[in-house]
Length: 134
Image 1 (cartoon, rainbow, N blue to C red):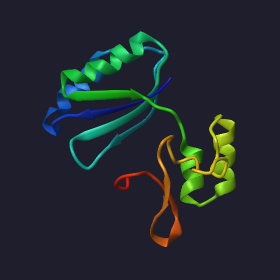
Image 2: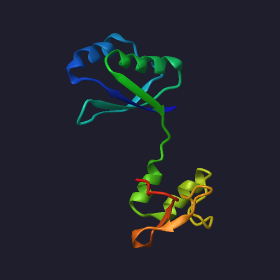
Image 3: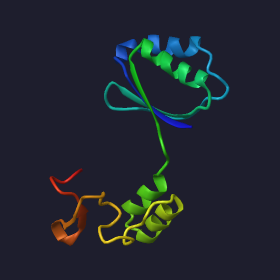
Image 4: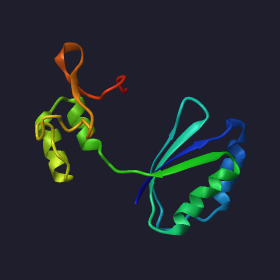
């Protein structure tokens, strides 16, 4: 399973953070895919784990900060297609994932049941009934 963890910790606590990591024994089943330092007191860890021991190892980071972890689903190809405005690739990815693609209903795929479709600036279709979502 793929996870994303966000650690918020005071950078002055870095020696304690490194000690927590070095003194622990990472299970062989944990796979760290990426670790990113943000421009503030946050770090992002992208990792795979299958066992309870994997989650317990990552939970040790709470000793020096606050770690928030959530399961994640890789939707990179869909976002890439959207960023590059490749509607065919976007539709194909949604079809493979078992989701309805845009144009498969009158309301459009981004509209939720009970929500209408309206036109935004420039005539783009937008789902929603109240204010716009970012």
